[in-house]
Length: 542
Image (cartoon, rainbow, N blue to C red; front, side):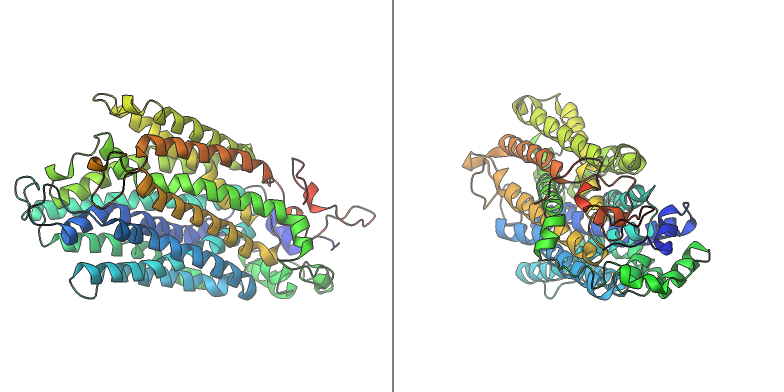
């Protein structure tokens, strides 16, 4: 597996920041805007869905989704995402990043629009339609994770690679923010046009017939930003690293990157057999050789992403329940259906604006200075500390006058999730694995994260219920309460801190250095060292 670094790869690693870098960030980032918008906007409309389709005449409070329906509506997109990450991650290594990149975006856009449609008017048919299309929406979203990360890592120079990959992922913050703002605009417009009394005044009139349009418009709007970049996705050339190291076509790689970088790169046909895809390095993903070289790395990326998403998704999807528990969101019966959407969206928007979005961009600014390892450790540490600070004196925070400090500390957990493991777990798998496995391994890591998201989403839905059966939501069994749930999430974050020590540092290293694909030849033409020594820290080999 020895060989001199290819000129086209050296040109990419040493390239100055150019317009094509920003173009790639925007093209990939718009997909992530849609990803986040679609995954998290469902939490804005679940209360409304409960009012429209599950309110019982004469009930003292508005209807809510039954536990099994709520779990399906909230979690089916995560199931689709997990499947899409594994499938498109594998396909991106088999067919090339470019060939499947447009497919994922089109699938997202079509299913996002279809999520607002329904076959029939009964609750069962509406929910079945919603869940069907949200599964396939998630399938497309899942493909965007490994493909966008891999494409951005393979286009970037090694000096600012972390910032570029993190900037793509940071568009999630704008997606969450955009979802909240759009929901506020739509709900405010409908409330002004069709005013309605609170539920406690008139249960029937509090949910206007036009409310059925509100949730549909909110879900469908996420497709628009991504559609604008569809053409440009199709026009992107295949990455030079895939073309050279996997497809073994150095001539095409040189031609593509000469256009992108606007420089002449000399062809190197003689070196094609020195690439990682050649017979000199035949080991496969399931081989002992891969396990020896990258087994601990894959364990590190999968475990940390799994643990992070348990906490992150449970917080995001169910923050409305936490805000209701501390009294920051008024009781449902004091609002009409449109007011409730506006109030929940306002809370999500404030959290996104004050903590989620800044956290992402702190990572973009500092990841190539501090390194991935330090940021991830810092994030897990602070998330653990703030979770415990919220949990142990939880009864104190629920008292009148103490809500603002609670919201501030709750926001800081989001800040350090995003200035921390939520960003770094996305970046690192795109940097440390060989080109022919890069998309697959990122997909496996991301799928592990979505498995954690499902544990967080489904688990928190039940665990956060009050231990007192009289205080649980309709249809739910007693749980352990919000306080104990937060303690559990704090423990999960601490485990994430520990597993971070399995993840190598990739700051300032080329992708080939990290993966061991092409040796950095010394004067005498020595073979490259074992890839386990390529990190700033010593990482044990299985």
